Image (cartoon, rainbow, N blue to C red):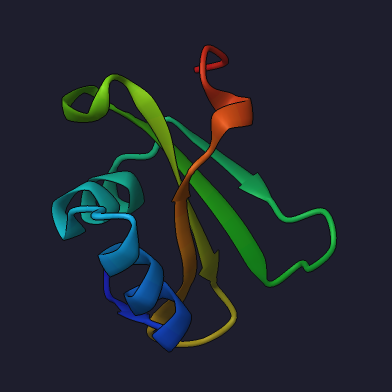
Length: 83
């Protein structure tokens, strides 16, 4: 998947020590994809990361632009145990 990172996404990836490989895996093979309830252009991709205690990574993507733009990335506590 071709994508670019917003400045915010770059910042939180560094701060939260999220590996770019985890982000790429989530975009290429998500376990769940949900639309954002407030913005039809935004998709939320979810994937468990076994190397990080099975926590669920959420990647928020603006799919209305080319290349797709990663808006934010974080471990979603609410999704833990749901996937």
